[in-house]
Length: 173
Image (cartoon, rainbow, N blue to C red; front, side, top):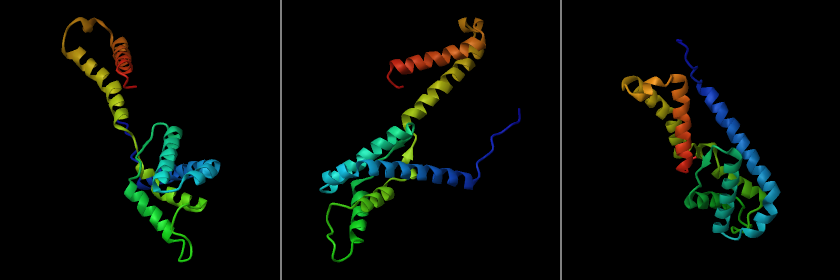
């Protein structure tokens, strides 16, 4: 007793975010290396580009499992694409298609670790799995009745298992 978790130092959290950011950039680059030829032929306008970003976000969500990703808004995509197109210079065309390096630049500007979050449903599941057994235990101790004869070593796992079964039946898991 009396033990406490160490609070992370500000530098530790930043290092963790930087590590995740590098991992995400690596996943994006590998995906672009494997699929750029298909993407290049299919991107003719900003809507096609938005669809390709959606495919990358879908791939990241599948690879990163518990993380969910917010899609960037079309306004932010337009802003970043226009910035990249403006860098081409006076002589070059300011229209699609984008080169491979330009696509990488746009995607790395749009997809960042700050856009990942743990979804609301996962918070609900954690709340159900931990809160319902705890509330059941408190109720068992306060309210006398038929649950008083069940030992705590059985009651808590039964409450947790019951919660998981109820979540599965309700298609929440």
